[in-house]
Picture 1 (cartoon, rainbow over the protein chains, first blue to last red):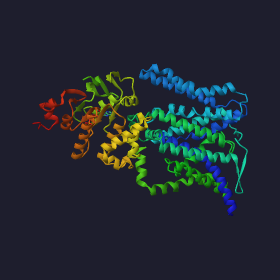
Picture 2: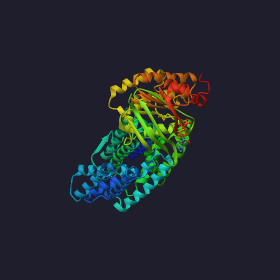
Picture 3: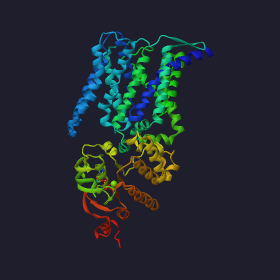
Picture 4: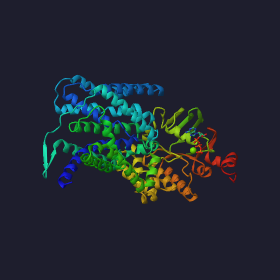
Length: 349
Length: 240
Ligand SMILES: Nc1ncnc2c1ncn2[C@@H]1O[C@H](COP(=O)(O)OP(=O)(O)OP(=O)(O)O)[C@@H](O)[C@H]1O
Ligand SMILES: [Mg+2]
């Protein structure tokens, strides 16, 4: 292999890796705060991309039906909970938060259907449509079992993935769609040609990584979010509401998923079921990085990008196999490096 | 003195098991009240119910207001604070982070948090030495100090302590009780649950004996110390 070819593959790997970084950050964020390994994260990315494509094509994005169903379910859950606790006086507030608020973007999309609202507004509307999905799923499926072991949460998460990717087939049909790129610029860095969109993805990944790292290690709110995963009772006893922490985490993750979809869609066509493999590869990256470390997730995801780019060159049929197979030696190495640490963590989380 | 916390007819339990049955007690502002009793009497359950961690029936007022509508987090913000039997620290975080999180209810008051932190470090020099250490690696006594320190960071008006001397060496137990005495001088009211009945009754002004989920006996702590029923069962019969 010549140096030139290696550089080219590495460049391609960075572009692919940057995609995984955004998704891996979202997965780590949710795990750190809620202990949930959120398998449907990739599905949200697909929803975002397909929604933007639909908006750009002048169609009504099917996402609004998912949001509507989830909002109604969440409202029913809230009402039932308040009824059981004899706190019906809080019902109006609960309905405003769980029914009206999540449906606002959907109503907006419905009202604006078919009208040309410009690129920027389409992107914002897509983000607003994706944002409520995470918190609603959390409210419906995870909050009632927030104390369950990680494994139970994971199983629920897998079930949710199948449910919402099934709904995606209903909403968007079996065909993929590619939204327009945010920029068509091409940047020349020392003789290597970078498409502007790839640079946007890379920049967004790095900014998100740094921002999350600073927020979670420096701010009291970040520590409080983390604390709810470490010890729910302890968190409540110092006045942190684990339910609110979960919603905040899912909102932030939803923002990441929306951004990923908007940025990634124009680079790789996403189908209704593309999210799973995307999420799985990002998850491999996150695991390589230790699952609870921000720099780890960024580096792990970039590593997966490189791995994929180089194996694809030698034998594209094997590119997925290699990414998933590399998980085994990585996990063995990690457990050799710090066996005691891993045991303790498994017990606590 | 008017009661800061006043509970009457409190029932609490786990599913169909009722572990606390019709308990009434008062904690005056700035006073130290102790609840003693055998294992399984329902002491921990009582504190959990007062804190809002467990569903409970009965009437509880705090500072004159009904507690029924407040959840745990609201009660913390109102100055009610529980140091639980299991401590519930954030094991993966440093001592300093645990303390900072204790002040979460006052997170906007940065200067106040810094002052509170200095205060806690002054009271527990051991914690200051270990501020960067992970809480999970602390010794039992240090962990108890951290739990107390974290509770103080929330600026409690009523501190509920569940067996603060549990599993500690006699010397440390004395240190802990010394600290408790120091705390009540600052005007914090304390509701103290203890196995170490003698030490508890010596530092309290009023005491309750809980047996089988019900108050079997109550009175000024000095009277209980010399009550034959208490000394036979809880003080090893050598009160005199
Ligand atoms: N989670 C639970 N589920 C069911 N029963 C429980 C639970 N926790 C405690 N109990 C029962 O409630 C009763 C009171 O328990 P509690 O922990 O309040 O006692 P305690 O007075 O604090 O005892 P100790 O001095 O040993 O700490 C006991 O009979 C106990 O078995
Ligand atoms: Mg107990």
